[in-house]
Length: 160
View 1 (cartoon, rainbow, N blue to C red):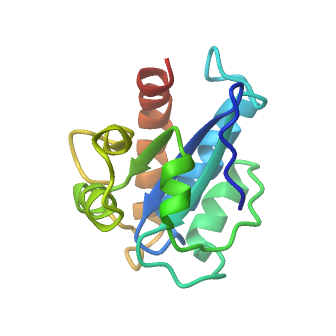
View 2 (view 1 turned 135 degrees about the horizontal axis):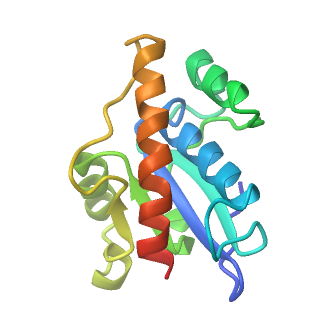
């Protein structure tokens, strides 16, 4: 996925471990929130969402549970997992990591400047977003509900 950083376009990158559960779900939910007009002041022409994993196997589809959550919400997703690269991080206006460990790993692995590191945040500053893989549909639903709450809040804070 190409990440553009044009004056009128802001790029938000969601990052988890394998890019098959949390980050593609967050990407789909964020895109849907913008497309449906729920996020005041943002429209589809102003923000580009992407996702990647710090330890992703390339080309894996989202987990069946992630696909189910998105499908139930009428959100289409044809994404495939992608490994996070330094170019993706440098081109993103905001990077939202699912855990403190992801945030630290991004900053350390890519040897980010202070300015670049200031764009890497946790999606939920109070807690890690627990990885739902292998924990059943309820864990995925809980993640989706957390995204419903945190994505609007964080985008408002970080893109204003």
